Image (cartoon, rainbow, N blue to C red; front, side):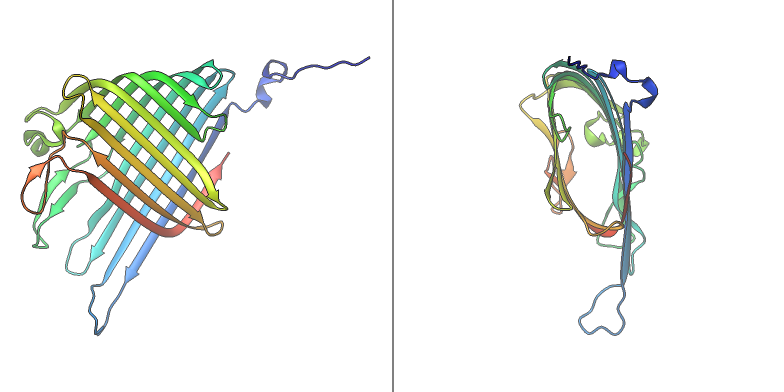
Length: 287
């Protein structure tokens, strides 16, 4: 006589089930250049940057709750110039899902983005600078609900949300008065309602080489819905050993509500691009 029983979470004591997975990774990068009687010329400089990413993910039966927090900050100091900011971001995302069928989930997302410190645009004079951003200036809050498709390993998902609210916040008085980041002059908050597509992908393409990509597309139903806000981020991380790693990050942003003045003095919406190459100390811990 044979007897078989399917093991489910209902037959396992609650204290032995790991519903939460948590972890973090941190990287610190430093570079320094010094010249003395160098015939080819050059400027003494140093730079320091740090990046940390944390996650806390919950999974129980048909319910999932994924939380991530990315914080980055960097400075650079060149001879003859004061210390300047080279990188600055806070990005928090909380995603709740309930399985509908197979790999499809009812899903809702809260996303908050801002920065830590003031940002300046520097003129040709090393001392001249113009304030262009500040803490919570801007800050972006996005709330969306829709359907999400994701793989079992969690390395790919796409969220299609026809119901999305986006709020832009500017708390600095001078930036608020100038109508920076798409808010009305003198107003510190701008509300938008539209649809969003959000997707992310992660894959180890070679041993110890991981590629990650995120794409966010947003259309404002209330004003110029044909003008799509675009945010694309890519990241290559290469692990050298347990404590040394290198990374290459690139980001492209286009938002026709954000006016940027170019080198010729012309103001208008423009494609924003950022690239960061970093080599330094790295450590990962958690589940």
